[in-house]
Length: 480
Image (spheres, helix red, strand yellow):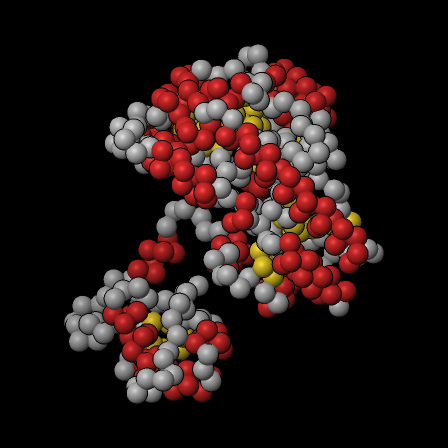
């Protein structure tokens, strides 16, 4: 959908409808709105620009008369020409055909809507999976960057696996998580999502089966589907993935690996206990099924530390382990890591060099400084304390306003509450109604397309005041 990031100047001498014509012409002439692009509805344009719908209609009629746009049955109003092609004998390039035939699958419409409205400061982001701006350590990061004055010796490309001092710092940090990993077995990536992309492209065959929890964050991504992988969901209970279902699934279908988020699962918030982890490890060892462990939330426990990662139990090189600073420190740093057998890390590093030629040198310098000493641990303590307050406030608000219409479990860490509605309903309709109220939701069907009773609530991003307000308004929408 086109972004209408402009408004007419109602105090200018040029009439508003002529300003709209000029704006649309510039978009078409510059190629930003190519031929066959569908324009927003008249109502959407009128609301975005703060004008009467009749003003928009007048402007569009002029553009139609000039042959730049046309109404197409079933498609609305589309760009039919550009200013230079009106006078040219050759037809303009059909960029929309390129868009429609590109090989990478598109996000589902709700995900596109979420991505669009997350940048709107007027929206209360009730499902966003990142820390509030208030929890990001701006001052400390400024101090770290300032401390590099006179010590900045590296701003070029890093070696394929990432800057060695950072890999050494990650190795030391992982030791506190019970994981022994040499720098040679660590690859620095631009967050956990890139780790998934590299794994899908570097070590898996097209058509491979990926076992994973259902619901799962992975269902909201096209990273594996773009490589023609098959996602094979395994049922969950209150302790995570069900071992007996996992064992049966492996026997029924060939699978390449198990993808799991055992600590404060996204989207359900579930924490897999130690005995369940050992069961899962035993099944995968018996079946020789590799595990891809996503541990980006593992350090965000709120009441007491959770069990050690699966990787800490790994004695046979079975587990590929991914971590990141995006959920705990800063998504803007774009720093994460993959831990695994050295041949796998070498292969993934080679693929990464073909993709982006290495992570940001400046971000790697800053991340290394954060992980040295106890600075990072002190930051985590502050984040945990704040998230615990936010979780308690959210659960209290749910108890006041959602009694009788929904049920939930109090999470022991992470960002999320998996809210289950007592009655199934059209979650897309609820999503759109909440959007009209200035509330951005993450409905459950983006994590499981058959889900019509869940939504992922996050207490990590919105302010406490906005959390209270949005939850109250959402309860009123549900009761209607």
